[in-house]
Amino acid sequence: MSTKKLTEKFSTALVYATRLHANQTRKITSVPYVSHLLSVAALILEAGGNETEAIAGLLHDAIEDQGGMEIRAEIREMFGDEIVAIIDGCTEIYTKPKPPWEERKHKYLENLRGACVSVRMVSLADKLHNARSLLADWQKFGDEIWNQFNAGKVRTLWFYQSLLQVYRETGSDWMTEEFARVVDQLAK
Image 1 (tube, rainbow, N blue to C red):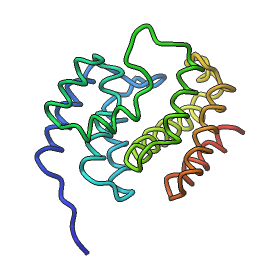
Image 2: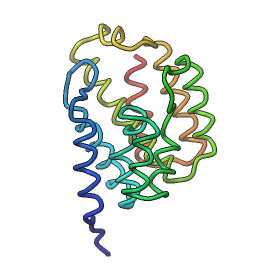
Image 3: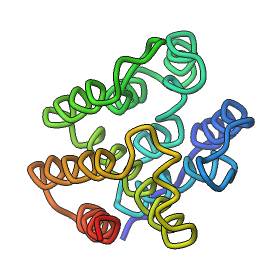
C-alpha cells in the first residue's frame, strides 16, 4: 500500500484559503468559514482524491466569494491551470449582481452532468458537507433555519435532490450514498 503525502503546495493553499476567507462565517452558526473548506478537503482525501483535488476543495469558493476574476488569475498563477479548471467546474457565477437563484442552480446542474471526475468529486464533497451542516443546524434550531436561505426549504431540497440525481447518473460511491441519506433526513 503506497502512502500519499501532501506537499508544500497543499500547505500554501491552506494558508491562502484561510487568509482569503478570514472574515467569512457560515450561515446560521457563524462558525469560521474555513471549517467548511477543511471539511471539503478532508472528504476529498478520504474518498481517495489526490492533492490537486484537495487543493481545489480548499479553494472552491474563493473565486465566487472572494474577488472574482482577479482571484481566479491569482489562483492560476499560484496553483496552475488544472486546479483553476476544477474550481471553474464548481463555480456558479463570476459576476455581480448574481443572476436569479433558480437560473444559477439549473446551470450548475447542467454543467455538472458533463463534468470530469475531479469536478464531480469536489462538488460532491462541497454539497455533502453543506447538507451535513444544514442537517445539524436543523436538528438544533428546527425549521427556523430555512428562513436564512433565500430559496427556502422547498427549493433548497429540490436543488439537493436534483444534485443527487446527477451524482447518481455519473457513478455511485460512499459520498453519494451519504449525501442521499442526509438529503432524505432533511426532507422529512
